[in-house]
Image 1 (cartoon, helix red, strand yellow):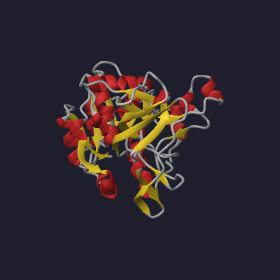
Image 2: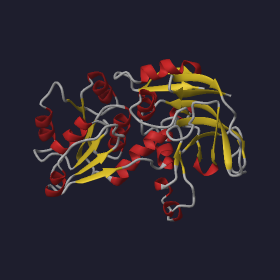
Image 3: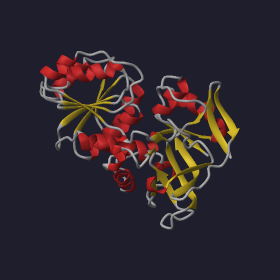
Image 4: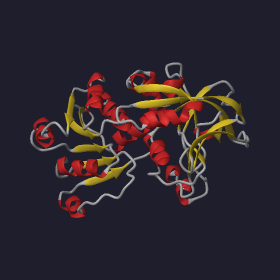
Length: 329
């Protein structure tokens, strides 16, 4: 089968063995994969993993072969990405997403940028008619954004700040907006902030063109937000969150940080702040939100590429003015 493999020499299209189907597994014929910020970080060498590897963890496909009767060939599906061991303390205490021996598709083990992918059946989710092949690649990141809301909820009309207008920032802002919060998006990319407004979230602040601290105080009655979502994955975004969150507030760390961040932990102690990290989230809720049209994803797609155009796809995905790139297998 054809796979897009990341080696020390870059992305290369290669023939690879079709993955075997073991008892309890489902083989997926991959149809589309979204390019994520983590994929880009690995490709650029900013996130270390063993090479060679097949990237891609935002996956939609159809079941090619199944070892379990409830999942039938031809069914359109997506898959969770964390494969747990079922043996460690976390797995035995129903915390498999914290598995001590977990493998992550496209990060620590081969992912979806191949014609076929085999995963445990328990990770596979059929998609309803309202979620097609392209919308399905958003299930995994949207589930992650929903998990953030569940851990750091906001009241109806409560002003909250999302720092960052990238892929995860756009989804997280839409999730909080869908649940009734008064969302403020703080970023520095004028084009992306304009796109946020097109999605129906009017309060955007450009940190390079405005007195962003003053503007946030104005929108939060001088107290600062109780909830801040840091979705940039860089040190500046994290420090901005510390600057604006009110005492007693919460900062949710949404993106993977590729570098160390220096800050004074005494600020967290004396201001009674809570730093909360979240990763994988509930696929069922994400699928339901997409099926009901509560989240806009199709307009987030900048361009679609074929598998053999993978290098071009990653180059465009790394452009700051790009929202989402999808690779069709």
